[in-house]
Image (cartoon, rainbow, N blue to C red; front, side, top):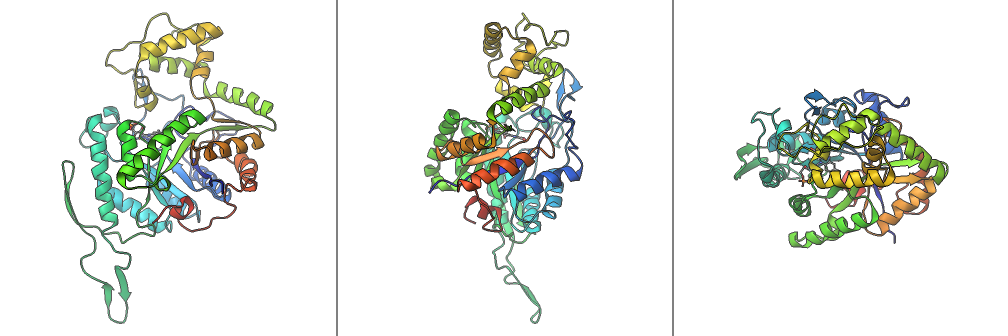
Length: 443
Ligand SMILES: Cc1cc2nc3c(=O)[nH]c(=O)nc-3n(C[C@H](O)[C@H](O)[C@H](O)COP(=O)(O)O)c2cc1C
């Protein structure tokens, strides 16, 4: 039996994958956009809809970064509203464990699980930057090294709250006037280095028992956290070799926690460009990359690595001769990708060599070295590629982000999904009612 593929739709967010300036692009705030993407995902029988999180507007050079979409509405509000206009689709929200409190987050997810009839998922991220932390009560709050210890305790605490109501706690016997089976429901007490809380949890057991837990950290600590606690990982390793290495790494970690390979799904982020033929798709992909990386965006990307103002440079000209500023000051704030620039001098050397070898301008280089699309081709090519990656254990499926909101998933739903169904590797109907059912996870 071939492995079954899992698919999710990521509502495009605040980065340059999203081409908001495309004539076909709609609102990123209006409810109708969320409804459109979610209903497309549901008609295509996707496992779930996914929202990322960003809690502070990005800045660069002291200004709001407005080349990408700016701003996004609150996750729980959007997902709760979507619960009312969908019937089977899972609803996944990214909610960090650094700036929130377990009691309130457990209440929110248990409530979403009730409202949606068992379709809630929580992507537990730790976030990392003090810049975002300034928004919150404690300002900056927690060194990066303490974040997974808080995340572990946060999730353990929230789980004990979910579990504090037995399934059969409410009898609501009208004749005898008995509401609860026994009066001890909801009791919790949790004390550790991060939390000292006790009381009664006030949301009854939800349909899934607990929401599906996703995790998106990539560090060693992040992978270990996922192996110990998550039902699925959102990864950035979508190619065959990187995907297989990541997949083997996290699945290997499961045994230490008494878990099996089936207990944790690996779902890389993926983008796609479809065409009638592979050549047509390649042409479209190149033009989408040019939309994603305007001259102004290319300079901003370069500034993120160089960590200095490069606004006087011509995007169609050569790379700066000066080196990146490697001091502690941060020219770009609130942007996760900047954190991946661990050794800016080495990366700058590499980029210079690439630019020289290909005779590339700044813009051409940035198009080349950042974010090429994961899948490019005809529907048949993309269906075969996705199936191959899953069967070869590079992933268990993908979290797809279209570059046009909200209609960018339609073509995939109409052309690739039927081919995956013909191959017998993707459902033609939902078999169960809850997200745990779709993902094949135990309650
Ligand atoms: C593909 C991917 C997407 C992510 N999206 C978000 C996001 O939208 N919001 C967020 O706060 N963290 C997001 N993260 C997670 C953070 O990177 C992570 O919680 C944090 O940086 C620390 O984890 P790490 O050091 O283990 O990578 C994402 C991670 C990955 C791999």
